Image (tube, rainbow, N blue to C red; front, side, top):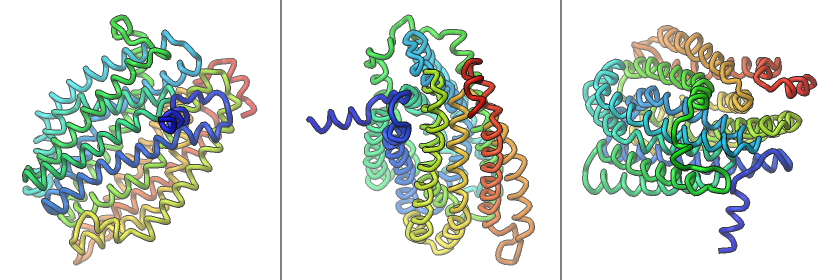
Length: 471
């Protein structure tokens, strides 16, 4: 087992306040990247099984449910972001007691928010699906899928939030292991429930929540066993008022940002639904491929938050500048390679989800529109992640509001209106992708401007603020 100990040493808890920033960031990011790959595989297998074994209508139903599900998960997103920022800063500052109270309060918030989401989401599912007005045959499957997913909210929330805490203290290895376990279990259960037991969309949903419950439980066990770093006991599990308030305040902008993305997706989903089942199914396939293309961007955004948070906690502002530059270069190079692969193999990628020629054609055109945007989004994620690590979560939120609400939504409907034709009486589906690309490019420009301007530094302690004036 010598090789296993070497792997744990390389991918174990990372103190990113020492050593070369690039090597530390690669060590931390590689498990995250593999984990995000597993997460996308998790979602992609669902879509492939649905599309191949059940049909395009079922694939469209899962796609219709997705944006609504994401909207109701904003509570988890907020808790996870706040907990990750606080955990990274207290870990960097070596404040064991405060770190333990953050983790304990986060565990209890995960439980309460999961139960709340289960109740609200289950009973609101028919109403929420009705708001986007999908075709009747799509709506029925979407409601079924959404309600079952909400029954497993505690497990899903536990993984998403507690893995964020683990990454905040520099542990990206074990969340990866748990995610791979969940992914493999999900694949097996997908095939078993759908292909063998003919459970349809319900089978896919049950496979997902069972796998998520396992990964969430494993994250909790890992935190309890990290006795060399934190103390999880009855005392620290009692929610700490000031810590909980700060956690929520830090996480609120991220939650609002996710809510805006989700509400935007729901509104655009309404436009997508009006264009027909083929467009809905193609959009689902595009979003699954999009998940893989976005994977390194979100990975490096998380790494940026943890790196900056730890180094600010350790009063190492000098390392922040070097680390963010290195990470931006790494993100650009990785995204460039993935974009090249998408452009070369787009037909085969979309063809995994559907055999319908119209679906494949629409999907290929969509990927071509979005490919350039992935590189721009890489820059935005790294710089916004750095701002969040410093405790500045408002600026990324405002950028999201402008790009999503002010730019993307009106532009999608305007372009759809301008591209109406006999073939597409309600607008060409390429309007959906063109509007998204434009919003990403403008978002990158705003992010670079605000980061270089340095307004986010106001969140730094006074001594670090003075030191960073030359930054």
